[in-house]
Length: 392
Image (tube, rainbow, N blue to C red; front, side, top):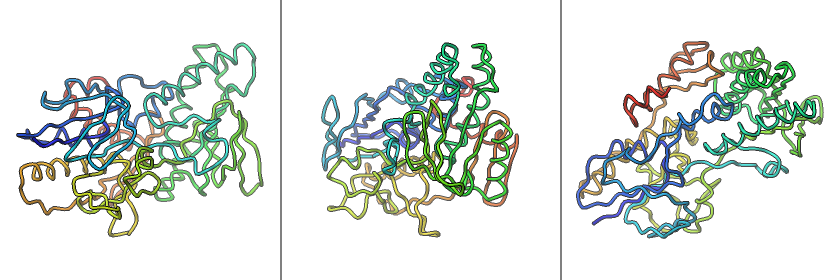
């Protein structure tokens, strides 16, 4: 009986299990630190209060009964077993699909004085913090309670800034607070926010954020964070941005379990993989271990750069591994390597506006947000059927 162990209930492993045919003489176990899968592409909307538990999909009942689900926190990965808080788990084949973690780049004060947006629980913490600060403002009239600094102008930071700009006025209205007192900063070190898009789209995104009332501070390097203060450096010199709520979205890396596992040679908690998604540049061959999602560093042969770890590539890795593992478990030859070609990239800036691009076309405005919502609904349908669509 072969033992297949999957770590993490993110896009890659859910996609794998939803695509994997019934395996004979095999035990398949999924270990997750939560009893649910969450749509990480919607965490910014949870943080702003726009969404809640409707981004969660319970693991119980999601798969056929032969899939074992265990809730445990993984501490370390070894050659033939995985160490969790509750137990140790032996395996013959391992698939690592653990989620990303925040990367502070060694900037002082990030860990101590900022909130991160890494998972569902952290998104809820941001939302609860915002509500507490609104309540505190009513008592103290301290305007800093209504000031938010979002550190990072990439996908997460820009999407979060826009969602906050639309949802906070509603929260203020419920509390009898003048919404014009709210101040949101989006701080980005690059010359422009959303630098992964062509310049016209980046500028369109910036213009829309400004229209929503967000003050975009691009070309601003973050030097340090203190309690209620972000110290930045730009062409105007060094200055302080004061905000009671500071949210860090400026950097992510792979899961910290990777760097804590001496079994691996890793960089920024990610493992470089070959065409079969096996780790390479390791002390020993690892053809019984596969890596997908945020912990996988997949080289784009055309550009000689690593693909960014997106939900889109994770879904494709899951589908690929379903075919690969099916062949491996049935002792069949399998020579097909993983190939990824992006179908497009879309960013939501609030409920009514987005920007996006495919290989030969760019989009902005309502059509971009509609396309993004369709992509999200398609995933919801795959994992939960019609009920997944109706929850939205």
